Length: 290
Image (tube, helix red, strand yellow):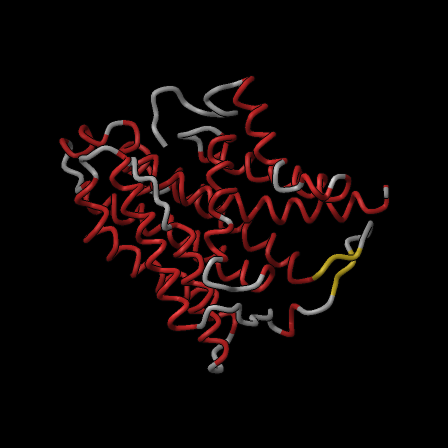
């Protein structure tokens, strides 16, 4: 049993990185616009299916890994401009219902186009096999996933802290009316912010398709753990989303090893414990929604 703890911990980190990057996209959208995007998982699934279609028609996996999320971003920005933007001034309940209905519609569209059953989507041959990490042997594709997700998270952090546009996004979270009064087009900020969240979800969707499989509901299956990640990490904290995702991934993996029947419940137990100790989450900021 002890010799399995190391691989399970690494599996937990991979799973937690998925939850973290999906939660980062959710947090970006919620922090700025107050929109609870229940269709976030649908954009993950869309990117996965687009990548599957590209690869099945002879396109390189490496090209599909970037192109599929970008196409999902275009669809997401159109959705933001036509369906989500009119609800910014209303209570979050309205956007929650609208995006929930959108996710149900998306599932049916995916079933009509790609069929109701899962489709095979394997990683490229270059990522087949396993690599030795010194203390264990681990699948090469999962190591690649960790590297990609770390690069994406670091790139997001640099964008938000080192670029003028990123600083404007962070400032808009604190006071969007002041940013608008200073001459910044907040509608552009909202669209870019929404698209950035979808891009992160799209990358996670393509990678998840190669590791967890691809079906019309695959993205939505990762959505609830992502929301729990946001709650544990704390509303308003992107760093909290990363920490929360890793904690949930490790908790699920270790519970799977020792008490398999309780693996799905472990993240909710962890959430309850965190909220009892710190109701705003680990790094939540008081007064900030989402």
